Length: 317
Image 1 (tube, rainbow, N blue to C red):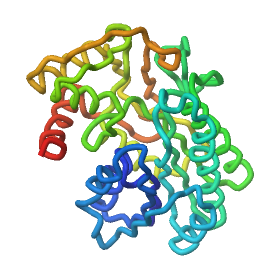
Image 2 (cartoon, helix red, strand yellow):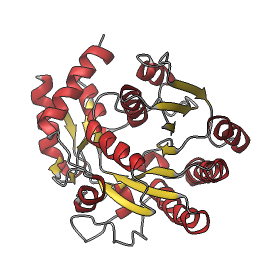
Image 3 (cartoon, rainbow, N blue to C red):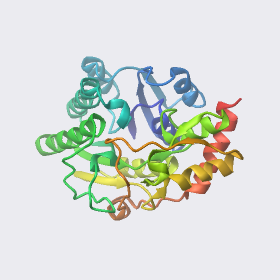
C-alpha cells in the first residue's frame, strides 16, 4: 500500500514514517520544515530513513493546493495520514488566522486531492484539546465538543466536521484520531515532557501551573503510532476515535518521575493555569479497542525512561 504522510519530519510523523517503512509500506512524505521549531531538529528526525528505497520525500507546504494535487496525481496513495499542522494550545492564542489557514484550509487541500486521486482512506490527527473543559470524565467521542478553549483545538474541530462532509458527499473514509498528550523520542521542544527534561538538565525554571494539580493522559508515541496504522488499515466510513491511555497522571507526579530519571531536582514556579488549559484530560478508549484493536503498552515510567535515553543520545551529544 502507498501511504501519504504529512508532517513526516515532525514528532509523531517521523515515528510513523519510520515504522511504516519497516513494515514494507511505500511512503510519500511531505514536510515544509517551517520554523515553528528548529528545522535542523526535523532533519535529524528523518536522517535514519531518508534514503530508504520505499520513501519519496517532498519538502512541500500542503497549503499549496496545486502542488498537493500534483503529488497525489503522481503517486495515487491509497491512504493518507494527515499529521502536519501548527500545534500548541497557548501558541495559537492571537494567531487564529495562521491556524485557520494552515490547519483548516491546508486540510481541505489534502481532502480535495485525496478525493480527486481516488484515495480510499483519510486518517486525521486531531487532539484531546477539542474537549475543552468538559464535565464528562473520561472524555468520550459522543461529547459535542462545541466549546474549544483556543484557536488550535477550534481548527481541529473544524477539520473533523469537514471530514464528515467529504465522507457524506464523496464517500471518502475519514477517521479523526484524537491524540492525548503524546510524548517520547523526537518530542517537540515546546511540549512539556521535553521542556521539563531539558530545563531540569540546564537548571532552568519550569512553570508548573496550579502547583502541578492538573492531570494529563500521557500517551507514549509508539502506542499512538500503532493506533494510526490500525486506522490506516481499516476504512471505517466516518469515525472519531480517542487515542490515549485512560490513566491520567498528576502533573506534579509527572515532573517527579522526570526528576528521578534525570537525577536532578526541578526549579519550579507555580502560577495559576491560563484559561486555555483544562484541569484534566482522560480518554475513554473503549471505541479504539473495539474498532482498532488498540491496546496501549507503555506505562508512563517506562516511557519517560525511553524519552530520557533518547535525550541523552540525540540532544545532549
